[in-house]
Image (cartoon, rainbow, N blue to C red):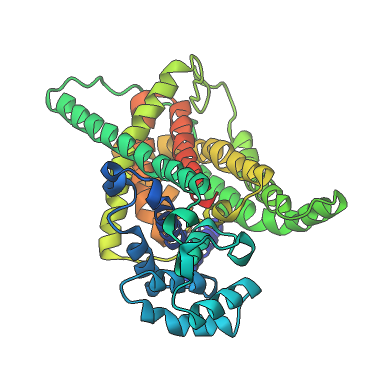
Length: 435
């Protein structure tokens, strides 16, 4: 009861604090709009509605007018300069002329002193910002022709990034809708196979409370980081590992520390002769069936989570912060650092979380409450454990799908593969947007 009470207090505090964290969703939207504006000259007219929309520069300017930081002021001024109301750019340019980096000051001064440069010639690269979109907008604002300001290599890369971000998920969503319709038809016709027996460790409710509240929350998420964070910092200093790799290794080692206590407690709890297939029913072999089940479950849950996120956006447009790791991935440009983040998110997190929530919690709750309520309760705790009110409803739906996959497949490995696919899609989108 002490473990449970302390865990509830920690989770409530974490959920309330998530309301004050900035959401990575705003950065994702703005980055996608920036890519669309950069890719615009290279996108064929037939693909414009799908990839970039009708007027990506106007959409980006609208987003920056809604919320822009100090570092966005130059981009905002250039978009205003190239819009139908160029006079709106003057106050921002005057502010940039008196502050900011040397290139921004010089560029703002030139734009305020002249209307258009004669001749339509290209502007020297050393007089323009390094960002490709800012380069092109600055070049055009200074009077050069669009063709002389073009950067086909950067614009073509932006087209490929947008295709990876938009087209691949769109095709997966379409396939998921088809599979949902097929599953509904089969169930209506009564042609779905019966559920296999749900096997799991012979633990009770108190065991699960000690495992999750005591091991996962108190020891794993609270005590262990306090103990090992100084050791990790000292180790990285001795090895002379600097930023940004140090950030990636810190995340990786902290997650390993989070896993250690609950997995050690679970190992001590699993006594006696295990059932056929093991206590947790991983059943990795043969690899074909769990991979196929995971991919099918991933396609089915994608439109359901997307619909949940869309409905939440209608009711609660800005629910607050998301997982801090998402922001780290979005802003990182170090290969080894991204590898540490990827290994944590795509390998360690699915293995650990599925072991706890679908390997232990779901079977125990299913024996007490029935399989349906076992899935619902384990999904709710799975969502709450991520300590983000903004992500709670999508994570709950994802947990329902993972729980149903555990019931229908009889394998924990299918859930791990599906969880890894989900995290992998999220990670790849962040890398494409951030690169």
